[in-house]
Image (cartoon, rainbow, N blue to C red; front, side, top):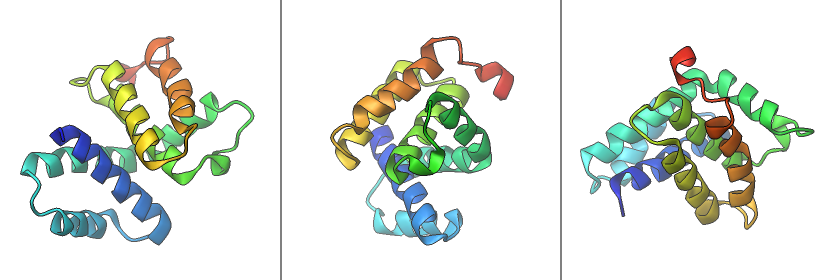
Length: 142
């Protein structure tokens, strides 16, 4: 498995765990590191970069999701899908070293693996306009 894919999976696990348990991300990240001690340090560094950026920008990310989810309240979006979207948007807007297409493809794969049958289509439908239809404003949001 590619190390960035593993990082994304662990980041999703951390965000989901935080939402379900209410524990601090510091504790959750420490636990994930212990449970996955065989992983390369680069896996953890990228995971932490993702998770910390999501935590820092959460209100902004959620506003973007709500804007793209026409006629849907954020609390109606499944927890896994919401966190996959947060991760994808963070990569698209704030990680200049990752092409948006890669971020979208990886988010779709996370959805197919960990969420529902239709989640991949939903994730793609939300992330695509953010990345490719004039909503990509990385430089304004950095």
